[in-house]
Length: 302
Image (cartoon, rainbow, N blue to C red; front, side):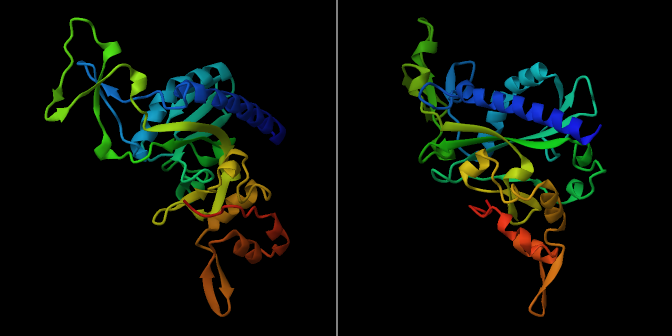
């Protein structure tokens, strides 16, 4: 497959994925912008609210939108392969039904707004499969078999003051039959009765869904202190507009920088220093002429 054909598949997939993402806000939200998921229900019709803990919210959001992702794949002419293990990359592999050599990686990335303008997440490892691109360790297929690496980003606002200790139990009058008597307690915990489901405040609200190629929203800093993860930029508009640190330089510079992150060294004065900024890397490569092309807005790591 030549480059022109690869780009044709990639552009079509990205276009369709973006149209799909635009529809997800209405799918997961109430008319007031709250998450339509209110909690878990048991056979006694008790509603257990959930915490806004990011791990819990992320997993439930993924479950919530997964049927829609399956429908999107079917309509776009792709089958989905899930990561075999929890820590493998990517979350989802899309394989073209008519041409199995066409593969796209998709990670679902969810995060909350730190303020009106800031959010961020990690974009996967810059070791292992990222460097050894013909190997399949901790990755569903070798990295170089994918024509593109995408993120389906989900940014939301957390309800103020919510944490694990704030979870409640509700019974909802509109769900009760006339002959049923609402429970007053579950174990030692009080049950609150409300008129309808919309009376229960959602733990998150105000969603933004977006699609971006991984390299276009990357920072030049790690996303977490102790693991070899690539960090995203943190400006929300930059994330949505694919205006990451490398967006003007190109994917080749993204690949080379992160393959050499913290490994290549340069002299500063008389002391060898590991290279952990894109500016230093361009100087190391003898390309100071490209420094002005670094997009510098909100390069801070998560």
